[in-house]
Length: 262
Length: 272
Image (cartoon, rainbow over all chains, first blue to last red; front, side):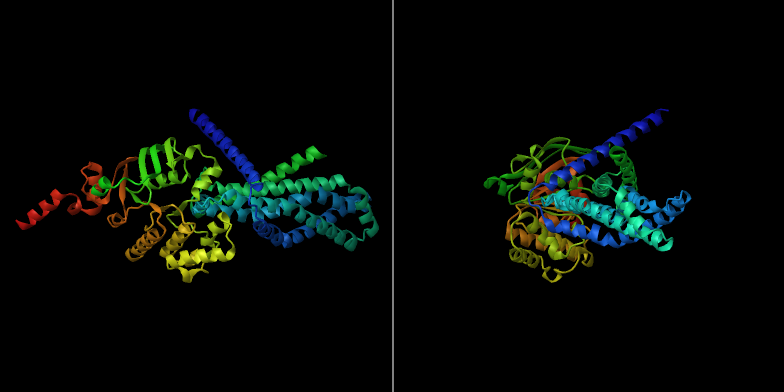
């Protein structure tokens, strides 16, 4: 019984400590954005890494998501004889939910894991200490470019995802099942309003911040991990944790933002 | 002893006063007092796992003491804001145990990084500066290589070039020769000596390469049981009567060097 309580207390303390550490990490990173000697080039490089190199994956997943929405939507709507609403159904689910969420999940898998491993290895081999000793702020040097790139890139990737998804749905709905082309786009035009786009935008901004924050923070504090963040195994375990935690957080925040904005 | 009596001591650049540090349940430092003087080379020796590197981390401000004060250039590190700490670190150079080179950058970019981030020099000035330091360390042929393509000794040399590229006032060496063979470590010592002659920096070296390291030291400090057992010039250190120092000298160098009495006793024995 006592051991159970002890464990509970220990876990609670650890949770609080981790939460506080992650919070402070975010604050310091955000403050560092506005520090002096801001450099553009590293941000552009991260945009290339997180953004440009994710475009193909996003095109691919966007197209298939749109197609499956077209397929499922068509069969469901046909039961009610309202195939004409296919366009709005596809567009609304993409713009409000699937676009931001799936884009974020794909970016976590492609770039988030890489960021966590990169920063984690730098921590493990004293490279972050070396930066600090050279009086180079590791937050400014390592974290800020990634954070800015994430915030800039996620809305753009989401937009690509949405557009491709809409055409994926078009391909199946109009091309395969012969839904009226005018109805597909006209229905979309009538039902998607600015509030929907805004919700998608807010979500993608929040997810961009969230995923870079969690992934870099996990790597940055690798040495403080409870399970011991040492060596190659420590990096791999922490990267897994980071991917899981950021994916779950994206889904939780997706719900929260929907609940607040609807 | 004679040198210190005739000349006034150079001013202290780093002072540790009663520094205590605990990691988890282990009390690593139990009140460390240590002074590093300008232009001198202080060597910290002791068995591994005694917290020698922790002392360096305190001096660098990477770790804060639980109790006690760390003063660098007369300023208390614990009372400084981050910006002020960074200003002090401008005058630091560090050679880490495994060199801690940035493995995704070439040798050139590694050495150039402090200049790019901390100075307003343009690319041609940076190039001149980087090449000067790489030539000093005999590494000018490896500029375009990546750290993973270098041997351990070469990585240390690049680390040394990076440590001195900003012409620091104090350079810290954490186990500069661990894991290197005799030739390679002699090479590191030679380069250390050469660069110190040219740049005139104060050096703090953590090492257990005894007795070779004594040749470079102005003062040797023994860390044991979480306390500095004594900080003496190498000659006096080897002859010290302090039991722990004596035990350390005997253990690492053998009886022959430990004291005059034993030495004469040894010869007396040999004669009879």
